[in-house]
Image (cartoon, rainbow, N blue to C red; front, top):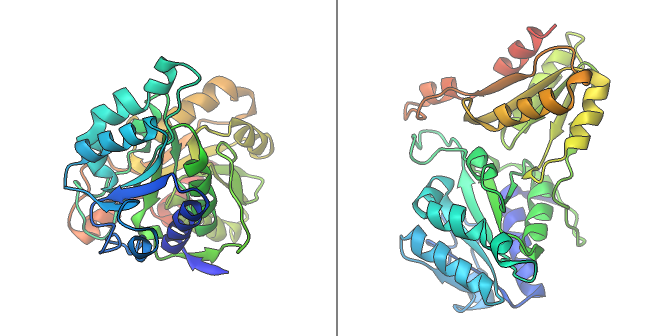
Length: 322
């Protein structure tokens, strides 16, 4: 069945809410309006106002409420309209949600999913366009997912909702309208299992979110030049599938990380350090990082494009590796 990324996310929530009446969703404009991307449209009518609720524009308050709901046995899947707004509730997420299960012992559960739209979106500017995965990777106790396809989005979100640990679930805004095949039958995707989106033998690209598609574009162009590129999508950053990377590097012996977040202290910095420390013998050269420029994302559309990696920039960086 061919569905959009946005529909896959909505279907995952609907199916899980039908399966388990402890699951509830809330966030800004998600009830009558159905979320600014239409993802939760119709859920209020199906599940009622006790399970589908609008919130005030106070991320600190409703993320704290979600934490309390999870502590009492409910399984909230809440929405932050943009991932940038998670910073308003950073203390709750970083200090409490991430740490409390560890601090309170193994019997304590905190089944909470925080969904948010992230990334560049045609002039949304620096306050609505951040990719913050690396920030939450730095917070022990949080699981971090960043799917690139409709299939992955649905399977990972269902897995996240069933997990007893808190999950940061990032959805790139430019992916919402993309379409992909999603089976009608029930499925989930376990966290910590990467997916090879394209097999190759000369270089491994570890690409995240929107950058997976751009890495595949670059790989297609480079294939015409005789360069075989393997594209690996980790799907989840915490936990991270190191063995999939190791297996890929054992074939290609060259590595690149492509991300949309800023280069300094980004996901690529962590993954490059990990490969250098743990997989050095597989590398024939330094790990290359391709990322956004270290600037607040500009409002001007052409400057925004310049600041974010595209397929040609990725391909150019790969050519320099040989």
